[in-house]
Image 1 (spheres, rainbow, N blue to C red):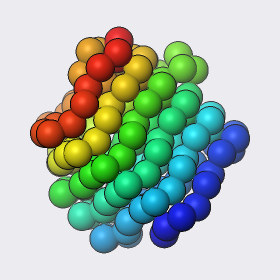
Image 2 (cartoon, rainbow, N blue to C red):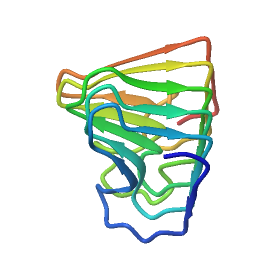
Image 3 (cartoon, one colour):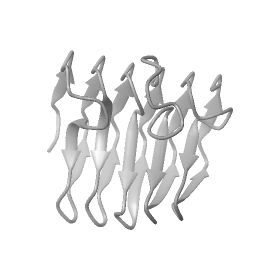
Image 4 (cartoon, rainbow, N blue to C red):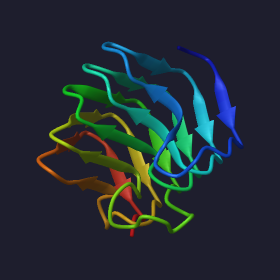
Length: 139
């Protein structure tokens, strides 16, 4: 899916305004902003968020649960986690759980709340690697 804008969607907590659930699902050149719950939820294998803006979503900007080899490249993940609910799980810039693996590169993780200074949360055996990216202003 590419070149779409999903904005102002009142999705329930712990659900994504955009859901990448099939293997090799990709979101590219898109904006996912100002949504109530999670911006982009990835549950599929080898999914990707490419060259997109994921901003001002109430929970995490991007969440990955269970899926292996999620790629986030050339994407701005900023000012997410403003709603303050479920702060111990899916909040902040990027949240991964249930043995998900996420590789972040050439991206910006900026000014997110609820996942510490890296803006990234990994729980329940998940792994998130961040390389060649700007990370600042997270708390």
